[in-house]
Image (cartoon, rainbow over all chains, first blue to last red; front, side):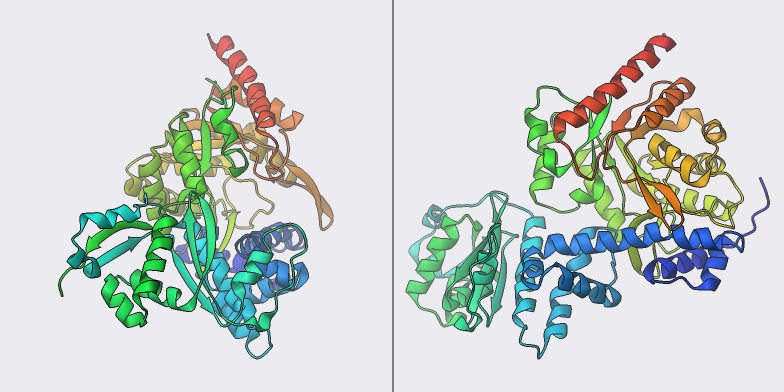
Amino acid sequence: MQRPRDSAADLKALQAAFGRTVRSVTADDADLQLLAGSDEVTRFGEQIDVYRNNAWQFFLTALERTYPVTQRRVGADFFRQLARDYRVQHPSQRGDLHWIGAAFPAWLASRMAGTGYEWLADLARLEWACEASVAAARHDPVGLESLRRFDADVLPHLVLMLQPSLQLVASPYPIWSVWQSNQHEEAPSPVDLDTGAEHCVVACVAERVAVYRLDEPDHRLLRHLCAGMSLAAASENAATDAATLGRLLGWAFGEGLVVQVVRATPA
Amino acid sequence: MRAGIGLRSQHHEAILSTASLPAWLEAHTENYFHAGGPAVRALERARSRYPLSLHGVGLGLGSADPIDRRHLECVRDAVRRFEPGLVSEHACWGHVDGEHFNDLLPLPYTEEAVEHLAARVREVQDFLGRQILIENLSAYVTFASSQLSEGEFLAAVVERSGCGLLLDVNNAYVNASNLGLDLDAFFGALPRHAIREIHLAGHARRRVGSRELLIDDHGSAVCDGVWALYEDVLRRFGAVPTLIEWDNDVPPLATLLAEATRADQRLERCSAAAA
């Protein structure tokens, strides 16, 4: 075996040159010289295109899988352009493709600001909530009867432990309606974007993503319950009445979203 | 000894009800990093029926930058959760300066790269508390700085890290076509005792620039040339657990099982000849 020629810095320099070449449309001559040597520059410059194409396709495919409705709404060509621009600012940071789209909604909000298409960023937030929900742990739900083991005077002090997959998304735009109308192969029915705000809950129940639309008071109350407040504290902070609480509890238990009921720890 | 197949999401349901059982399953480690989801649930159910190996594609062991500890912890958690018989990674790098390319990128075959990869393999084995296998890559470029052959490179990494080898016969075939790899010298350099798994897969032909390359796309049946090379590998190394990989344009489960049967027939002939 020959004496080592490279230092540790050489491996890093080679990988950095390779990375720059894969990232860019055209290769830098100095990088190609470092990678291929003078005799093989032309062939190397052509064949590294396999890696350039792979890196882009893996990135694009991961984004398309996470944001199918956003892609459908903007069209495949414009989505591809968005993906290229997003990748420049947010290249993949993990070896797990799941995370490629994590910063996309916030990036899209910045990109769409002032264009009249701000709702697209909220739609993307809803799709990222679906992605996060699928990846979350599942726990066996408990039913409404779990409240019966507590005395009536304790009920206001109870805290609901909710499914880890539960995600809340609110928007001034009808994003639930847009998402819902794009869940089938056939052309989506048009959604009037002036119909106003929608408040969504995403959860995974029985291995299927469910996206619910709640009234604003229910959504506000659920947000406080998700924060770990007792039933009484959540109602007070959300400024909602007993009827709202009763309705929300019936829905949450009925959908299998409550996994445990515990008594609030005294402050 | 019988062949296994790669578990893909398209077959999550069918694999639990098929009458023609594969001998074992291999799953991509990164698909099972999360606490929940249908893939995790499916693997939990499949694990109760089949021996399993976990095959990582995202760790980028040979990257000059530090190992992504979050990723490594996820690998460890998946290994603890699913208790696979084999754990494998690739002899590759994948990230530099904070950017991941989510691909299996080739290393230069240098003494420095041997030392670096062997150190990384030892780090991972220490962290996981078990031996891992590393797989030879399909590659489309070679580096001017390479001083060793691919076989010498892998043998040196095995010697210095104590890892095993996952020998991908299709990758060797692709490298012979694309890069002029001397297959006889390649197989001759590999330490027989270290080869603990074999991969078989399909490849595509694609024009890239002025040349037609074989692209290791795992999107078709194993070609006749790779079957012939597999027979040669079995004659050299004896019967080794073999896996059919098919990741793109995934066919019905029955097609994968038929491919596994073709590998079984060759494994049986190899075992009979050795008896």
